[in-house]
Image 1 (cartoon, rainbow, N blue to C red):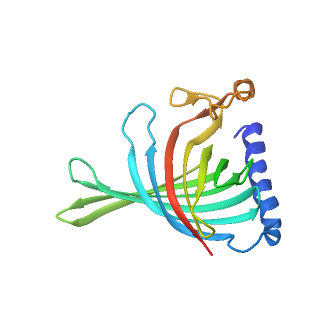
Image 2: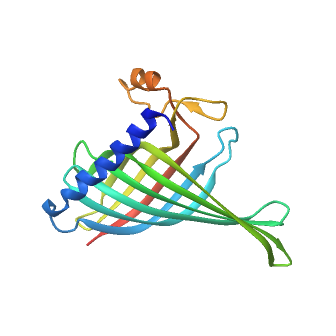
Length: 204
């Protein structure tokens, strides 16, 4: 792991610690839960996207920040019906809001743990099972649309498995934001996946 990658991870952790420390300054209706749906492109060489469903928890830690914990799930058989594949990624994210209004854009960054279990099946019986797990950083852009004091809908686009340095399985660039391109080129930022997410949050 490069020194730049370690610094990026340390910055994410520091951001989480900062916003958690501000949680007591936030008013009521700061804790929310709700369903979430994702369309994930894990293989950059393929055009297909996989659909996931799951749930999320959001905590408004200040007027300009929030943290999110999400769990998605997908269960499917391969084309030959010989393997059952279960994916359940978990993401922890920091959301940064330049402004808070009925329509609130945000930047999102964080870390994810992507677990997959592959079961060899025959006649509905599991013969063998293997499990793998990957860890990677993500970042992207999104927006909330407030539905009164106690609910909001959101949608965002996230690049996944962000790294420093590029290879044949990665694509250059992370955030298509003017002014960031020079920094991205110097750091050689790349990614190996992307995802759309959307959901509804009910606040208490």
